[in-house]
Amino acid sequence: MKMESVLASKGPSVVTIGETRLLREAVGVLVEHNIGALVVLDAGRVPLGILSERDIIRTASVKPDFLYLTVAEVMTRDVVCASPGDDVDAVLRTMTLRHFRHMPITENGELIGIVSIGDLVKAQLDAYRGDIHTLQTQLMES
Amino acid sequence: MTPVPLRVAIVGAGPSAFYAAEQLLHHDGLDVRIDMFDRLPTPYGLVRHGVAPDHQKIKPVAKAFAQVAADPRFRFFGYVEYGKDLLIEDLRRFYHQVLFATGAQSDKRMGIPGEDLIGSHPATSFVAWYNGHPDYCDQKFDLSQERVVIVGVGNVAIDVARILCLSPEELRATDMADYAIEALSRSHVRDVFLLGRRGPAQAAFTNPEIKELSELADCDVIVEPSEMVLDEISKQAVADAHDRALERKVELLQSFAAREPVGRLRRLYLRFLVSPVELEDDGNGHVAGMRLVRNRLVRSETGTISAEPTGVTEELRTGLVFRSVGYRGAELPGVPFQERWGVVLNAHGRVLDPETQQPIPGEYVTGWIKRGPSGVIGTNKPDSAETVQLMLEDAAAGRTFQPDADAGDPEHRLVRDRQPKCVSFGDWCRLDAMELERGREESRPRVKFTSVDKMLKALEK
Image 1 (tube, each protein chain N blue to C red):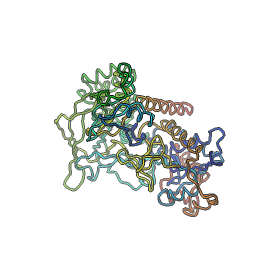
Image 2: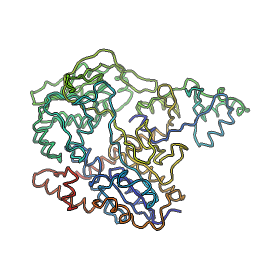
Image 3: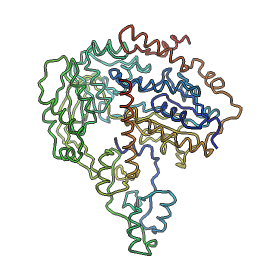
Image 4: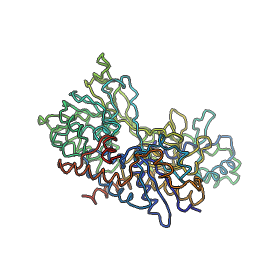
């Protein structure tokens, strides 16, 4: 299964934020959309980094005034991005091993989506359920 | 407050459509009426026209779908085409919700020069042809060619390769269309090449599929030993996966390299680490050959192993090419489409307004037209469950179409008016019984009707 299968039914919108915005605003955006990470984009829609709940909590534990820091000061840089043609199994393994909860998807350098580890676990679970259902149907008929 | 009864139209009659209908009908306490429409007189979509005809053990899933259709709250209207006989405006007048389950009907292109030469076909056309799909029964494939190339190593590619290599006896044991059995029995095809761009460890096919190839009566399976040697990236990936099935797949493929052909009528060549770069013209607009580039494997930062061309090319003589490199859904009139993925624009099954990106109340999607072509028949069950869950939530919240209160029964006020020859599930059961009876007479699973006219004539419509 390819990443594009997961993206196809997620809708095209990706919630993003600029690097100069305050963390206070970023928290508001996360709450408004009920999501766990924001992709930080430059003016050309190229990902500069990712701002996750974990980045915010890590900062909050050491900087009590964290809400007034900028996104650029807190985000994770050097973000790993997947391609639509990447294998879900491989990406899931990489996310697990490297403790990524979210991964942006880019095509020709441009952001086109984001997946959470939950999206990939669900996709894989559905694939297994489908295999099991198909095998059960065949067994019952044989 | 969920409307009582909740009236649902389902467009399409393949597995995802039936799984969704089943889940709606089995939902505790829901008063629901379902009308299912299909442009063909026959239900079951790819179970009838996609599943390989020599894989009869997969087809009984249709029995479960027939049980769904037996529910008195369910109606089937075959030979009624969305976009021609029915439009979204019509459905809005009679139903609270419409669920599109129309599948992925077109193929992806290879994007190489010569792709449109005569003799180059989408594998889906060939599959639909041998399965007796009425839209494809007049297609012509030049089976006088001795060498055939199939691009891709997915399920469809494997099916096409196997079908091309079946003996006349094996063909006659299937429910393949009569004309296809006749044409394939007279086929001059001797060498079939399956091309995979990545290596044996990344091949999509399953171990039973490989084993099945090795058991073909009239065919030797041949691999290039050098292409069976795993590179370091693949060795590491196999070791990391801790997957016995993957290890077994590699062993099975490598075992072909140690076998000597025994001189059977046909030869099936499994090629790996090659991609087509051009189809060559014979000077008269026909395919004469294919230029391939050899690939090497690279691993991306996300762990995906992909093919990268080395620049080393080779020529492969062939007069018939089937491409099986992916599929796309077809755009439906009045329904937002997401061109990038070839699906209806949706979020988890709710159709989205392209302007606002917000759900359009009452419009839903499931199956391949929702997520793209992935998985097996059963994968559509959890997929449909996700959409049905949202349909029920939205119905309870009043986010539905608002059908005309005096619209009446769509069967008499809409469907039979637009398509007087529409086919009911009872009609289909009669066709089914006729096909099975014809099959019994020839000791075959069934003998299909392959034209709509013949189906309607048999039903005296």
